[in-house]
Length: 328
Image (cartoon, rainbow, N blue to C red; front, side):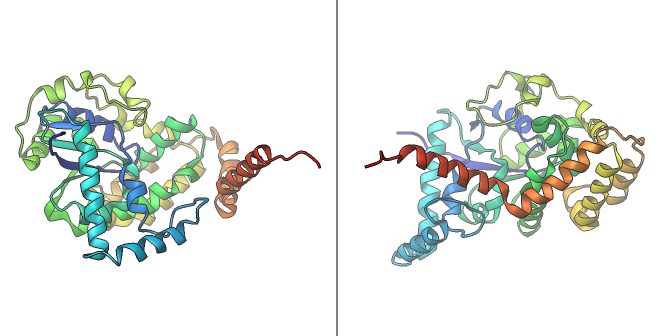
């Protein structure tokens, strides 16, 4: 029988440096992990009507599950307790025998961050922030070869970041906040503070030999693991090579305005400083025509929910193929 472990949840947006921090922490013998579990997303989403598209009528499913747990002693809390115990058993099966913790790093957990904080009162929670303009740049470069497919990440950049900021503000006394920039510039000091929060000793090999950590699983960072064999400050200025033409700079100004001074301050950033850095980027028309087209396409894509339409057409095609009866 697997031993019990206490969970650590690493909350961040995608492309925030979470895989680097995960590998650093995984070097500690007290901390087990796996690439990106995603376990809690479908479990917790069974309690939410919004945000799920399925062929089984998700809204009716949520009603049915509610009808079921209302007949249990403890109701919804009892169901969440069962989800918690199930997740803990799964975590323990992936942790090494000596591990006291299991680190779950799943960026899209920003969709259920409040439910996780409520369901796992004994857990440890690390909120990892990164310059939001660096995140935008990294999203484009990592998955779309610097093409302006930013509409794919609206749920992260807006809904997700707002959820994370609100959750951190509401639970700041029981969580720890870390900045990606601090991790790169002052790795020992940053890791010391995290280890202190986790009540485990800091080990120098965490920052000197994290590269030897292999994360089992296909999910996770497809670029940084290969590109950086040691902690480096090189990624900090890379975003300026991406945010270059007038359309991108205009979008980023609007995004910073939406974030506002208070939200950015909560994350550890200064609105005026970010705006000044953005304004200092040399003018360029590179990629402007492509960006204009993709911006218009992105608006249409979101309005018509083209991904859902494509799935429906694919399913329709499959059904025709599967149920093509011969003429009588």
